[in-house]
Length: 430
Ligand code: SAM
Ligand code: SF4
Ligand code: F3S
Image 1 (tube, protein in one colour):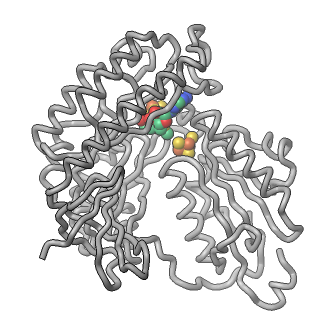
Image 2: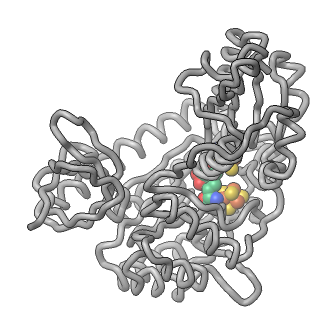
């Protein structure tokens, strides 16, 4: 690429911008690791990078328009020696069309190809000056490990099965090796990823068995996973989470709607009752578990009555937190053909009402933590001057602690003294 740098034998650098879900974050991390292995270093600023990589999402129209705007922006500031790559789900969906739209793009790599990228990367880089493995890749204290890829569920609103391909689980023994490596590189917490992670199956090993296997890793302090599908949340898995000390008592269980009719129209393959019975089963085994969710308002045909059922489900379950979305029409999905689309204004009003309700519930959940003792994984220092450490409890709630020293990755027990909105302030128990 940059001749002067080649002559000076300086390292080439990369810059990532990642949109979308944790799977994309995991893919960016994996690619960064591959680049580091080829002698690249991470650039702090886009202008300093030789290789600019934008990892994209397609899940909602807005996700695509934001990624495109960023690609245009980088295309405009790009210098001759710099390369602009677009990878991920939008790259999969639009392919070479993207290059026609934004000509400054040098390479498009779709999400389905990313899994096989390590083998093809050298061809893409087409560089002869690649150096030996340099520097150690640090995956961080809390890191992601995709255990399965793709999705076969074809919920009628969702583009993921079209851009991520068919569901397949990765071999448990490979995952064990990868997880051990991550722990050796400094990870204290591993989050197992999959679009429908609880349908993991490797020969006779199901997801509970995989968790059992990884639980044995020495030095690994915490295991999380996402996303669970309500239809596949077995009693066995709930018992595994409850019984293994390293597994966070936190289940992210997207409900999508509180209306049985809308769930059926979404092809979610469970009913409102089934969902509520699963919540009861979780709380029977783990009364203090944090349960979070994803929900959508304004799916085609959603009436005011249907929406009220979502509100009532939220009131009943009292999720610790929720990701809330207005339905966005995605090409190819069944919902795009449905004639009874909900007007945009109604969708936004419903979203506002739901957010207002959930914000109160979340604040209340945080308030109820005051006086409780929690286990906090310290992830980073907030402010070197005040020596404050930031960490996460089992439920991913942010906890601030006054502590000194190099403590990243350690776990401490703390009593919660105060809650300010979405942050808990704790004091270490001695
Ligand atoms: N696999 C997970 C599941 O089954 O819930 C999540 C997949 S998706 C990447 C993340 C969230 O985006 C979904 O749970 C859903 O709430 C939301 N989502 C997906 N498609 C959408 C659409 N067309 N419009 C609005 N939100 C959408
Ligand atoms: Fe999309 Fe449904 Fe698959 Fe989740 S389970 S990725 S919402 S099709
Ligand atoms: Fe994730 Fe977006 Fe792709 S949510 S799987 S990055 S479409």
